[in-house]
Image 1 (cartoon, rainbow, N blue to C red):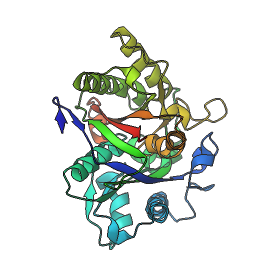
Image 2 (image 1 turned 90 degrees about the horizontal axis):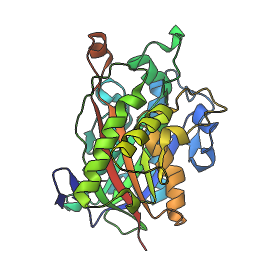
Image 3 (image 1 turned 90 degrees about the vertical axis):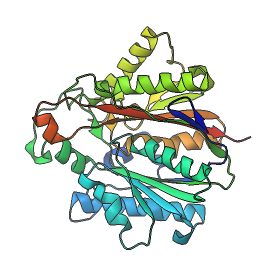
Image 4 (image 1 turned 180 degrees about the vertical axis):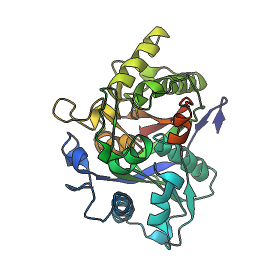
Amino acid sequence: MKIGKSSFTFHNVYLKDTSVIAGPKEAKGPLKPYFDLSYDDLRCYEKSWEKAEIKMYHQAIEILLNKSLKRKEDIDIYISGDLNNQIIIGTYALRNQNANYLGIFNACASSVEGLIIASNIIEAQNANNIIITVSSHNATAERQFRYPTEYGGQKPPSLTCTVTAACSCLLTNEKTNIKITRGTIGQVIDYNQKDAQDMGRAMAPAAYQTLITHFNDFNISSNDYDLILTGDLSYYGKELLLQIMEEKGYNIKHNYNDCGIMIYDRDKQNVFSGGSGCGCLPSVCYSYVLDKMRKKELKKVLLVATGALHNPILLAQKESIPVIAHAICLEVVE
């Protein structure tokens, strides 16, 4: 059911299972025990970065199907997103699979965008089982959005490190112990930010706008959640969001964190401001956070995925960086 201008409630959408395939830098971070599989080679023993990401993507779906005891034939729709031009990773991973396919792109916000789309389809009784898979790869993304990785240019502290991960989630109308209950679609906003090496601070206003819209639409406060988790604002973006929220009269310090901070150990790993990418939020949420929810250490979590909707051509033309954020609520069913 639609709530306000931007939000929805869901009554018959459940999270069945998830899978996370991580890269070598992510495997050296604090969340390795929660991943389904990780690689010590950034190429995943393939001949190119793109082939490596396709391999991880395919494995994420295969592991998810095995965990959920589902066959490919049981899946009504596959929703897919990544950071490569023409979202090719999901397309190539699913080619010749007889899969009903929806390709989506909201940059690093694609994971929650996919969850919202799938939840609406299931709630409308137009599908029973939908798999949402997103991926990002440090080498493919850095080469495409900033500069060739071989260039070796100086990187500022505000830079985020693209997470190498493929993450898959099965939503269903079959009852499980974790339910999707609320969602809020974000709006494209632009504060005339042009620095592609400071994406966290560029995206923070979008997270703020979506959070406020979500609270207002449902007439709730931040205290309604055990945890509010943004996608990839990382260190500087997280600090800016906290500052904006406090200035507007919202104190979320006690129940807020950012996946870009959680995925790495910034004191021990050379990751600059922290993590980013399509795989950043789901690699944390589909592993560590869901483990906490299944143990009932967390009962209600709000995921706010943020995305920068630019490309290198427009940045070269001195254009600004539009941004967006989407939110969805995961809730433990008693």
